Amino acid sequence: MQKYKLVVFVPQTDLEKVRIAICNAGAGKLGNYDNCTFMSPGVGTFRPLKGAKPRIGKVGRLERVGEARLETIVLKKDLKKVLAAMKKAHPYEEVAYEVYKLV
Image 1 (cartoon, rainbow, N blue to C red):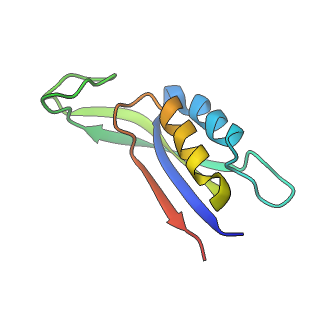
Image 2: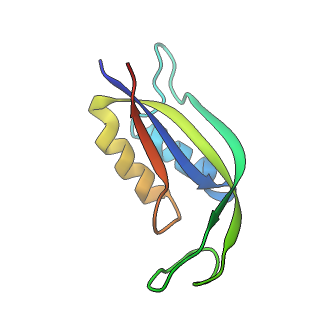
């Protein structure tokens, strides 16, 4: 079965909400385990531009936010459902995420 790695950057305050949503949608299954994720803290930066509706910060001002890098494994059959759950649970207007095909 084809596997993918999902990496998403989430504000610390919403980390558990997003983690639960993606795991409930099928992410984080590894052998006889589920809810397998890895989280590492960091600082995200962004500047909302004209037309943006930021949840955090103000248009035109550079922001720094305590975020976490949330990583997990997703089976191909669950990928669309997991991405949809992630986007629904994530608080940002634009979600920063990456998907890697594992070999």
